[in-house]
Image 1 (cartoon, helix red, strand yellow):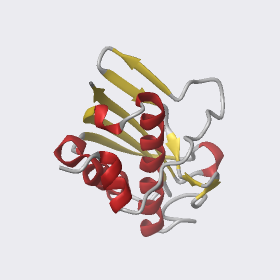
Image 2 (cartoon, rainbow, N blue to C red):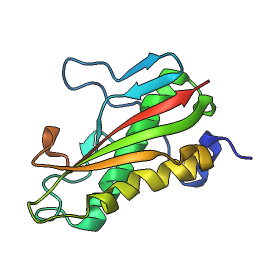
Image 3 (tube, one colour):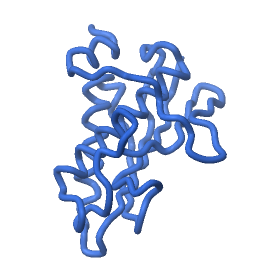
Length: 153
């Protein structure tokens, strides 16, 4: 079976340096066998993938792409903290925040962008519990923010 890093390569994804914290927090915290990531916004190469509110400024497909970008940043944080993504035993839970127009009710579909990537990278160990929450706005104008809890070896 391919390693998570090999799966990323097959998907054409290269993990760069993880985004630095934008305020007074640390990017990851481990307690026991659980590793928590801080929320990761939708950036790639240091720039927002899109900005604004899903269902108003941002369409559903772009929202899904933003969630996927957030998941890539989660993976970069995990790699930085663990050194090897093979140390991830299981993705336990994702919380996906979607900056949403008042009438937008497809946060769960936006969140699939992150969930599906993690399943592609980790196989069954990437299947997780999840919350998808609509909010008025997110830091830096990102349409999506994702935080993760993973079990590690």
